[in-house]
Image (cartoon, rainbow over all chains, first blue to last red; front, top):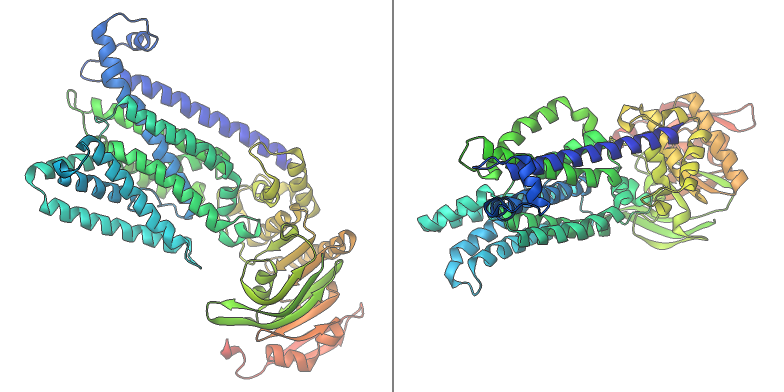
Length: 344
Length: 252
């Protein structure tokens, strides 16, 4: 009876994730259709199918909107997946790249590159994402380094992450204080988080990291599920907790680093997407990890559409939209749906 | 799977908890570990389970993967069903597509403990006793050759206590398991364990048959209680605690 019920539950979870994937496709199409010129869906599909001969339409869809729509979905997926992994390995519902200072570190790296500007040997458009990526990795390494200490608990790791957040925020404030008005404007715009810098080349890089990390994390899916029972119990079941945490931190570092490097600081997707996924598919990480990626992609894709339709003619920085939508949603999640998430 | 320990010393940081434990447990035997709070019972199990660094000798005559260890804390609140928790007992063989043999092992362990009906329920919805049974089923599902159980019946009512201890005792004999259980209930220990080991301040104060270990003098030293030892209906001693020795409880 137990196993039959469990198999039924597995089918239901697969259907939920597939439905979210369909919603993502719809949102993706809406993202391509919306903008200063609202395009009919049939025209968008004709462009994607390669049968449109309208050069203007082809340029709008393929060169302007497609990179943004693809980047929104991929970055959302990377943030959702890394958030789910972080919440699991740190046994903390508030863990995400944003709350643990990884985004703040990336922001500091980007600001440093903006300030260094012409003094750098590489063009700024490459230096900023590289610096953001390197500092995101550094923040992850700091937290993971503490995790290697004997007797380190998930609580200690979370505290280290919060210390990272304050450290890099302070350093960022210092850079902003020292920056010229032009550089300050550039830093602030970067920190908003924006998909306007997207290109298909950057999207391909995010896709490559995602395609490499998801299967690796899925190999650890059962071990991550066991970790939700606590370190001691997971170790009793045969999990090498320390090395599992380290490999997951490495994966999270790559996923978050590549995501924030190209689009800047985007909050709440990495925090909220895993919670939505957890409510709908439970804690079995074979389902939770892909579902978190799909819900992260869906959230950011919807936010991308919202950023264009809220004020016609203006594209809001997407980081503002995700936080504005995310805060009330998160409050509802914590107050109304907490018990089903298993965190309280 | 035989366990031999000699001069086993272990602790946490600078705090030494075990101070030279020597004992042997043979396949087919149930050894109950007794002792006051803080005497080193759980630390001994952790060290035996390979979860704690130690000095001295500790040798199992089989692989570490064959040890089923049930830690004390069952308070995990996660969005997993009881069946999924039991299935995790098969962690070493689980793959993304779960094999029928793993599902059968989980179902079998739940049936053995009479908790099949709990399968679809979330862990957080279960009572402390039900959770304890679920985690016990998880350990049994791993098909262990040795069982290390830290207070496996502490949250159970007397009917379930009897059921679980009888089952463990029978399974140990039938499958030739090596079972070491930390128990607080001295009378249950006397009834279901072949031998008792009484720990005091990180050392083995006494080890042997129940009537050799459950004596007024040893209980006074280990627990600081005056106790009467009565003959039980099955020949095993029954401990009747009378009063705590002044100052002992306050020393916790």
